[in-house]
Amino acid sequence: DSGVTQTPKHLITATGQRVTLRCSPRSGDLSVYWYQQSLDQGLQFLIQYYNGEERAKGNILERFSAQQFPDLHSELNLSSLELGDSALYFCASSPQGATGNTIYFGEGSWLTVV
Amino acid sequence: DAKTTQPPSMDCAEGRAANLPCNHSTISGNEYVYWYRQIHSQGPQYIIHGLKNNETNEMASLIITEDRKSSTLILPHATLRDTAVYYCIVRSREIYNQGGKLIFGQGTELSVKP
Image (tube, rainbow over all chains, first blue to last red; front, side, top):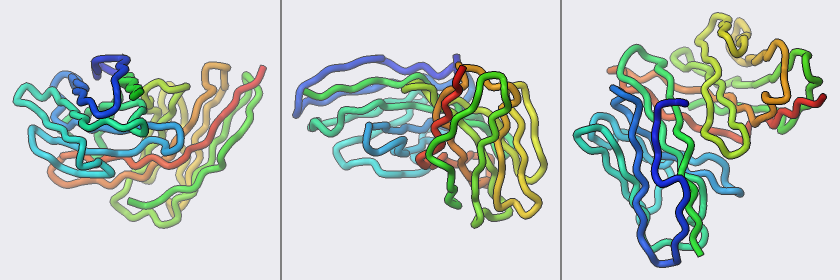
């Protein structure tokens, strides 16, 4: 158990809909990362937040957005869903501290768009 | 971040040492070498990381060449549960202790066979 909690674990929704994935980082971790893993794309970095502020952006679509709240939990919002958005979405967190700090991943949220 | 090159797949006999190579010839002086693994759609699991010295923990050993252009992850006594995709990642240190994102490549699919 990495200490990173993601909900829901599984989600099935229709095209055009909007979903929200939630992540609770490890206690005290200030950085939250979101990744997408689909069968043909591997693990793709989407976005990073640090203490409530966006820190780095990867291959995140404009239909997707994220935020980190004052209690440090984070949400990834996916809208106007398409079949190709079906994937495993991982959240990860890392602590403030010495450089080289380790990133820990949750178990992911399976999203199926039908 | 520097790119890494890993063999796409490897086999290892159960109980034997698994040696997973990684090339990172463009690594810079402020970049760490990290190893993660992913067991069949579970969240990526941290294994070990290093800067320039060899490192060992309860899971594995990491050998980094003196020029830092390549490294080897060693699982000393591989078991069937070590079957997974292993990712070698070069990650930059960031000032102000805010961490840096991980960029995953395709990794090495290790199959441990009885």
